[in-house]
Image 1 (cartoon, rainbow, N blue to C red):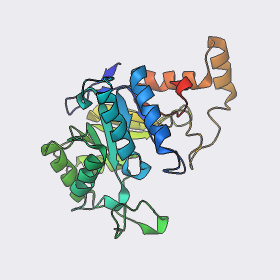
Image 2: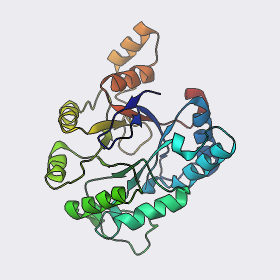
Image 3: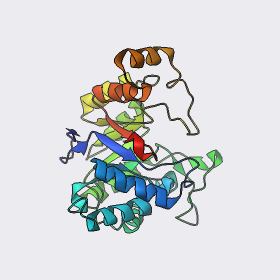
Image 4: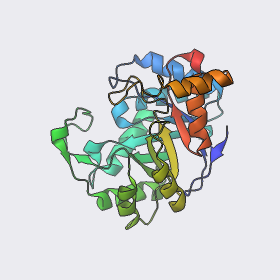
Length: 269
C-alpha cells in the first residue's frame, strides 16, 4: 500500500477504510466487524474511526481477532485514526477522551488522533453521550485543547496529532501557537469540493490532506447526488471503461491526498 510521509515521522497508508454509518451507530456491530476483517484480508492497513461514530470498540475487537487469526502479526502493522468529539474538546478533557478510546479499542496507542471539528460543545454530564444540538455549540479554546493534544503525543498515546474540517484560517490560528504542528487535516474532498486552496496551504505547511466522502458523501446528512449523477463524470468513466466511483477515487488520489473510503459491501473492496 503506498504511503504518505507525515511531519510526525510514521507514514500514513494513502488509502484507509472508514467505519462511520448514518444514522450514527445504526449499522449492526457484527457487520462492521466483519467488514473490517474482510478489509484486512483484502490488504487494507489504515482504519478510521471516531468517538461519535460509536465504532471504536468494534474496530478494536476486529483488530484483536485479526491478530488472533494471523491476518496481521500485531496491531503495529495497522494504522489507526480516531477523533476527539466536540463535547470533549475542552482543556482537561482531551487526555481522558483519548484514554477512553484506547480502552475501548484495547490498544496502547493510536497512530493519529484528530480534533474532529474546530468547535466545542457544552460539556455533557455523561462523557459517553454522543447526542448533540447546534444550540450546544460554543467557541473552542483552541490553544488549550491543542496543548493537551500535544501532551497526548508526548506521552506516546498517539504517534501523531492532527485536525479535521479545519479551514486555512483555522489552521493559521492553530499554527500561531502550536509547538507540534498538525500532521494531517481530514476534510471532505471530491470533484465538486476540490479544496485546491486548502491543499496548497497544507502542502506549504507540511500538513497532509486526507479526504473523506470522496464520492460526495451519499447517505450522509450533508450529501447530495451531484457527484454520482454528474454527466461529465459519467462520460469520463464510460470512455475509460471505469465507474464514476473509480474515476473520483483516482482523481482524489492523484491530488496527493490520502483518501478514506467506506463500504459495508465486501464486493466493493
